[in-house]
Image (cartoon, rainbow, N blue to C red; front, side):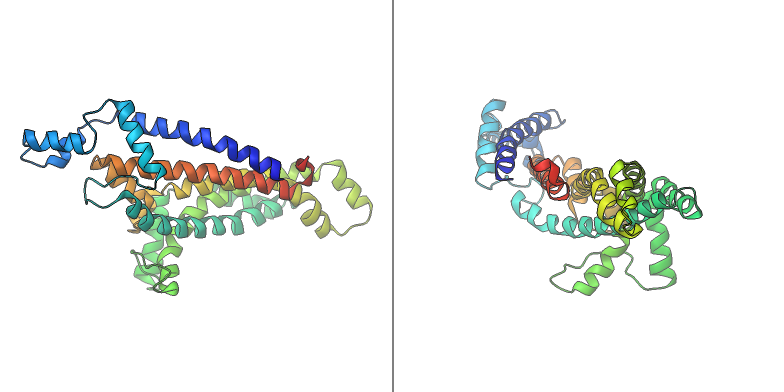
Length: 313
């Protein structure tokens, strides 16, 4: 296990290095001049020249990258051109919001999708199977914006049970925070649950036809033990991969859902930064998202080993 972790950590360093180069290079292709944006409407040539010198925009691109990566390694992602706040502070403000929303969404997805997939595989060809497949089709086909609007109409306007929009930090009031995020979390988790259900069903059907499952049944083990202890454990590998990827997608920002429910998370931050040509914020958010993806892949690999001991060799 330790050797595996050491190898993966060694691989992460060059991966992040090349990702940082890609992020910085693609940023240069965006239209607009950040110096002109910061100079304001007057655009005094002396002010523009001072801005270029202050932010090293008058230097060649490789030199600009060196200055930027030095700041990143020291925890300095630069300063937002729009509100003059350090990008690090903006990320620190928005990331916990998205972490909470994504965490709740993935929990909802797992609680719905995996049991539905297991039941569908075990009860193949029954009404339970058809019902689970119908749910999966509905979940994949339903647009998030429509489902979000319908939930607001039902639970906020008609019943008055939940707030229609806004966000309350967990540290201020955990009940109000959960009430404010449960609907957007369900909207995001609904689609993922449908995907998880299909993958779980497929994996379980394959495992249930394997020799060791037939041997376990031949030994007289209870069906519940065969399914939960033998079949499900070996079917979890593709589910872990899918869960890690979907969680990474959620953490990168569910733009549309955050807009509908006025959730001030990563999605809204990156959209505003792109429209305002706030390059430092775009670079900081994308680099943070890439780091999260890589970390989640490492966690998924560790989970493989914990779930399937045969991979430890």
